[in-house]
Image 1 (cartoon, rainbow, N blue to C red):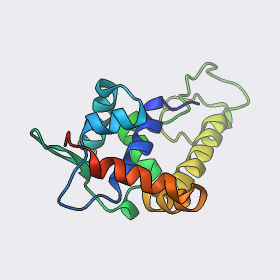
Image 2: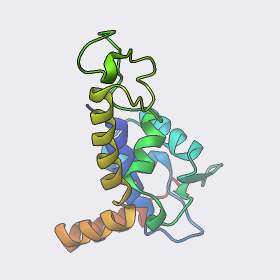
Image 3: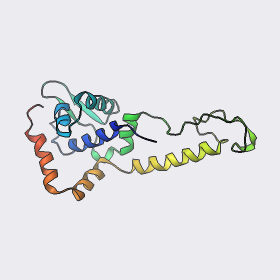
Image 4: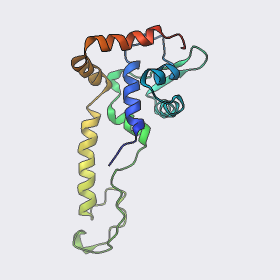
Length: 169
């Protein structure tokens, strides 16, 4: 299992939107320059975040993005679903029509759903649910506090000042 780099870009970028004043926003150009990312690629990421209601956009020369919800309301899982889409990680292909893995020797006919007959699929879906639970409990607010705890104060202040001092939004 591997999430695309879009998830990482999204989470990193969202951190910078947490502490901006409510009436302000940050432009894609500033976010991409600060992080050394492609402006085009980051625009695609923010398009997905906007569609999911995680960020809102302000058009125009002084436009940009800001959080559409509080940091406490945005979980890692929300970001992953926005960027990657809603799909299960394990995609059962029903490679064996009948064998001991299927209870009552019945055929696994709908493994993309929670099929009560397929032991492998049930196990994989259970594991995915545990992972989703952990990711739903980690929010942008939690991440912001963790960054305050683990990063030098100067790094955090310099990041905030970068966006306060940019003129492109």
